[in-house]
Each structure stands twice: as C-alpha cells, then as structure tokens.
Length: 151
Ligand code: DQA
Image 1 (cartoon, rainbow, N blue to C red):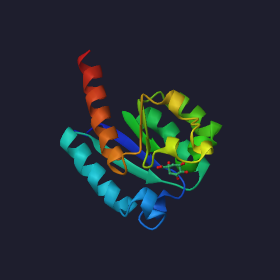
Image 2: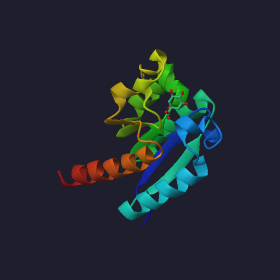
Image 3: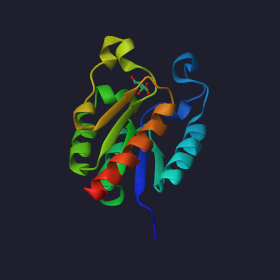
C-alpha cells in the first residue's frame, strides 16, 4: 500500500544551500536536508516528495497538485514568502495542512522579511531553527495528521 505523501517544497535560491551565506543558512546542502527529512518522514510512516524551484509558476503548480496528491505540505517559499499572492492563492486552493519553514529567523533580519503572504494559510510557522526546522515540520504534521484520523 502506498504511504500518504507530504510535499516538501522549496523556493528560489534554496538550491544554493551550503554555499549561499553559510553564516545565515548553514553548511548543509539541500540534498543533505532532503536525506534527513526523508529519514524522519519514513520513521513516521509518510512518504515525501521533495521539490525545489526558482520559478513562481512551477511552485504554484506543485501546490495545486497537493490538493489531490498530498496529505500535508512543508514549504519554505524563500523570497516568495514576502511577495507572492499567487503562492498564497494556491495554498488556499490546496486545502492541505501546511507548515511554513524558514531556516533563518526572518523577524530578526531586514524589515521586508517580516511580512509573509503564506503565514495566514499555515497551521504552523517555524523560523530560525536552521535546517532542523524541516524535520520539526514533518514531526508536527505527522502528529497533526494522526490526531485528525483519530478525531
Ligand atoms: C528564507 C528567508 C527568506 O527571507 C529568504 O528570502 C530566503 C530563505 C529562510 O529560509 O530563512 O531565501 O526563507
């Protein structure tokens, strides 16, 4: 039987993780993060689909697909967090429990990073926990989805 799938989505420039400003984003690559998240999801009984894009429309399409194919979404929309009404609208359409993740503490940085178009649609928001935030998000979703099933 196929396991329920959580989509783990990453926005622009996160493909450069490991080389981009490591003092802020850490030394791990996105492939390292993917391996850790996959292990964590596996242990919780979920499959994951990992997707990164530098293009807003591709992220929108993936989020739309979540409505049908995912039980949960973990998303780091990166810079689109602060600009994208299209991603906001896609998440509204997806009607899928969503956790918003930021590696850095966006509230302790430039003022333009404090506003998120995604947070109003997220069940939980994790910022500043480094790449561990992705694992916390999986853990939270696993718990949330289990509770939903027993309710
Ligand atoms: C980020 C924070 C955003 O402000 C920034 O544009 C990113 C990464 C984070 O993970 O801390 O690209 O989402």
